[in-house]
Figure 1 (cartoon, protein in one colour):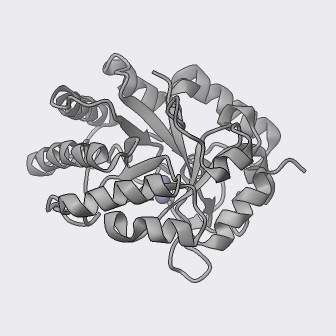
Figure 2 (cartoon, rainbow, N blue to C red):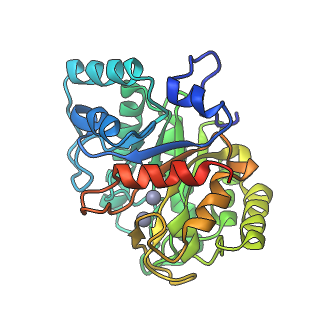
Length: 303
Ligand SMILES: [Zn+2]
Ligand SMILES: [Zn+2]
């Protein structure tokens, strides 16, 4: 099932209608979660939003009240925002060698997926994990088994979205083929997809700063995972150079990727109607802000 940003029949919000329907959607990770996320999105003029449900640093299952969840859904609808994504807690590591971390990760992912449905989000974005001191092959096998458990116990249709990694340490998902291998081992379950993080792939060695590099990346993505599995783009510039294998986000245009590369991505047919979601430090250090949103909007306009 292809990943669509607009469910068929959904009425276009003014911002989307203005964009003409085949422009990328500019969004952001917003602080405040279910309680304050919508207000923050409106403040910075983000169309799509990504939130944490609960604390990203705690295993404790989140516990928002039904009224809070209802208010969130109602205000997303009222303001014509979306798509909405939930980002899983950072503690999740489906490749963990320690049995207790592995089990908690499976449980947490299943729990977060239930919140994706509750808040009306399109998918749950998560980092597949890190192999630790073990082999990457065994680690990938653990990720597959973990996802199998989560999918087997999940009756819904929301997406589980594996995010590309920067290649730091023994993290899983530095090449698209790694993620495709995981999807293939799960028979390409319709609920699986991926999220490409521009800072991560650049650090993992994909040179998306040149037209040829971008084309090669798009081609490789399509040949492995398949473009129809791409559900979101994390739009982040990078403090570190190509192939550095570290994960340090920078404001759009202030890092090593640069404005020209973002303009090419935003205007690339392969990414038309993809949500571009900022996870940048922001100009005042408080995360994605209006200035970064406006920068992406400007770069999305054909010049
Ligand atoms: Zn990201
Ligand atoms: Zn990152």
